[in-house]
Length: 255
Length: 255
DNA sequence: ATTACCAATCTGGTCCGACCACAAGAGCCA
DNA sequence: TGGCTCTTGTGGTCGGACCAGATTGGTAAT
Image (cartoon, rainbow over all chains, first blue to last red):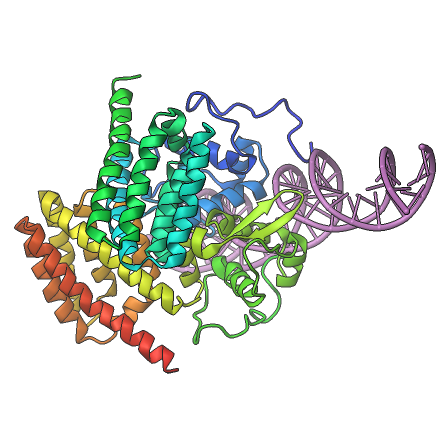
């Protein structure tokens, strides 16, 4: 009974999200821990079972369990009190942005509210970012953007999924804004919707339109015209946003 | 040689920021790990020493070391590759916002560039947040803001440090904007500058002015006047920003 | 000399059992 | 009833061990 479990596979985590992908072994424990917490309907301030009990319940060693808890603590989802226990925090209010990213990574879908909020905040951030980018972009920034665009063209011609190039473009724009902290935040947003973005571009017809808008965006940035850049970004985002909202509609209709 | 270190105290972490506070024992390992990495001037992609070597070097068990690494991995500062090693990532570009928060918590001061970027992004976020707050605030939101304001008055009268009430007010405003993801991001920013804020309000003369501006802000939100609210926030932030910039000036002069 | 193969070694990933310090509660005694 | 001790439980830590996979170096066959 050493090393990896000798048993068949996982003791089954009581069917969560349908068609749960073969999660990264690293995040798998957290991936089972979070639904467990949610399923228990624990309120902020409530105490979780002890480390020893949790470890046994999930069939892992205390060390592995503690590693997961340490991560959750860093993301402000739980709080460890020595000689007392592990307590749930007000995740929705105090949790970090990366807490949501982590949830998405382990396959927990965003709530409808969270989707709306993410969409709204993304718009705020990217509109400001593209303004700054237009104002400050240097030659190197523009070159980087053009490089991404060139690669995008290649990817489209090859009929591949544009998802990665899409995020690369947007991140290159934010980078042109010359604010790395800004870039970190936006980067988290893109990690958050990585899977969705692949779905979005799975329909090959979307790629050319998106690419054309990117080019227009690039031109506005190149011309150092913040107004035009912001307008272009606004229109571009509208398309993506409507996709998200449609998804929510379909979801609420029970598709 | 079990349990807590038997040695005097910490083997001294090679003097970082002046007057490093007695770090939380939890973050102390990371607090020593980060300077170690920085001191080695490792580039993104470089491999760190093995877990066993790091554990020995820092005088902790592998388990404790792994817990710290797990946190750094979650914050996208390092990447663990099975059967290969631990690699440094492009922290400035890929690291999460919470990576900076963690650094601040362990006593690593922000670089001048980071300060400027944080200040800029905070302005962007709070200006938008206060607009939304003015547009959407409900009765409960306003009540919460007023409650914070009342407590602020008490704290000022008692001559205590306004720092906590200050952040509570700003966070209450963001909460009134009705976007919890937004709140998470801003919350990280406030955690980031927690220590500095206490210094700021250590000068008791600042509290009354700040409070007055908060009240004006509150009134604009109560009146549901986004324009006025944004203008008030803009002016309010200017004061704080000038403090930060002065600090940088003094720092670069070598104070 | 070159190629093919194999065994030693190193790495992260995991498990186990133990000990520590501290806090809270149970139980006992005055 | 009051105050005490002792048991129990908790997170925090340690050290040793095994595993699977990758890397590497040397060796044997070509």
